[in-house]
Image 1 (spheres, rainbow, N blue to C red):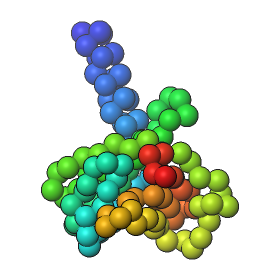
Image 2 (image 1 turned 180 degrees about the vertical axis):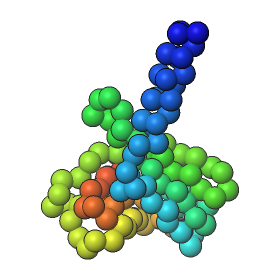
Image 3 (image 1 turned 180 degrees about the horizontal axis):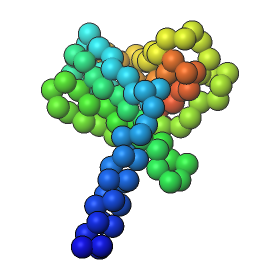
Image 4 (image 1 turned 45 degrees about the vertical axis):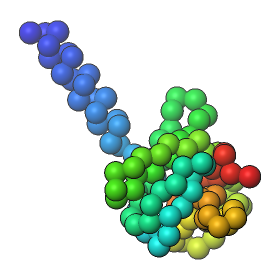
Length: 119
């Protein structure tokens, strides 16, 4: 019984840590047109963006469209000067041919991320 209780407590602690990210690490945006993330196209519509940090310096942005399509993109943290702007969260898109390419994600707390696979 003691082992079972220990396993349950560990699972609860792990689950709580997963959901302990602040709201500054999450945003929902609406794309009027399809947007490329790397070589993958997200359809137009609402998109949920979350920042996932690992134990290393790696940062991954997870984008989930309302259609259920999910993309994980490697990103690098922007310096405060590069991420500074107004107090609103925003995204920066680049035009690549006829496509819109996600370039940066800026959060309201002035943190920002540059997608690594964008030229």
